[in-house]
Length: 66
Image (cartoon, rainbow, N blue to C red):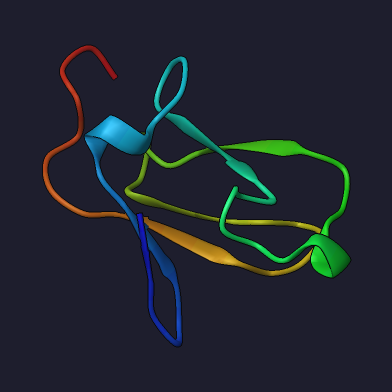
């Protein structure tokens, strides 16, 4: 998982369950937390958190079976 100015970039190894990431992610600072939400990045290759607006982008191929 890497963070750039415009998005958090994730790879297949960062995904949980069926192609999802959760936000807030472990690299976020404590003050900026909100209720944990699961975002499906495998479906389209990206997702945006409805609470904080953080954009997650899947780098590389979509994992098999998603």
